[in-house]
Length: 200
Ligand code: ATP
Image 1: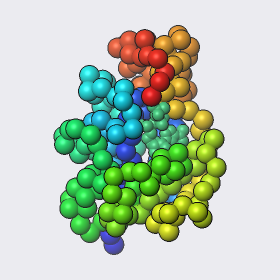
Image 2: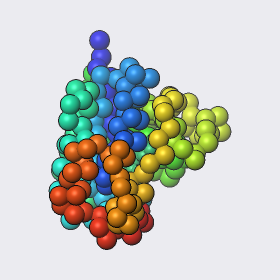
Image 3: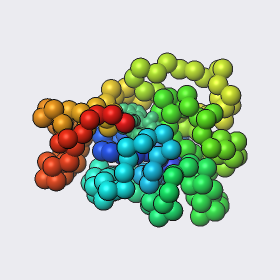
C-alpha cells in the first residue's frame, strides 16, 4: 500500500501547539503515515523571517517534534535556500517518494491565499491539499477555485499564532502551555523574541 505523506510548511518562528495539534488531527483525518514539517528558508509572504534565526527555528522544531513517530523535520527548503515556494518542494518530494500519496497541509488562512501562490496548478497535480480550520477564518469550501483539490478536516481550534507568541515574549508575558515545554525552555535559555515587534 502507498505511503501517505503530508508536507506542512511554515516559518515555525516558533513552532507552537496550534501547529502540533493541527498536524496530529490531520494524521487521523487524512490517514497519514507521516507529516514532514518543512521550515521555510524565506517565506514569500513574510518579510521579517531572516536567516539569522534559522538555527533557532530548526532547534525549536526538533524539540517540538520529539517523541512523535509520525512527525519529522524536512530540510528541503532550508537546503535549497532562497525564497521557499511550495511548488518546488512538492516536486522534490514527488521525485523522492514517487509511490507515495502526497498531501500539502495548510490552515484555512493559507488556503484563502492559495490562488496567489506560485504555480498552484502544479501543486495540485502532485498533491491533495489538506485544509484545516483556523480560528477567525470561515469555511470557504465551495467557491474556492481549488476546492475540488482539497480535503477539509476539523481539528480543535487553537487560537495561537507564532506572531502572538513573539509578542507575548517581548512583553514579558507567559507563553507556557502555548508551546511545548522544551520550546519554552529554549526560548528562555537563548533569550529570543525579547525585542520582537510581533509583526509578521
Ligand atoms: P505567524 O503568526 O508568524 O504568521 P503562524 O502561527 O501562522 O505564524 P506559520 O508557521 O506561518 O505559523 O504557519 C504554518 C502553517 O500552520 C499555516 O498553514 C497555518 O495556517 C498553520 N497554522 C498556524 N497556526 C495554526 C493554528 N493555531 N491552527 C491551525 N493551523 C495553524
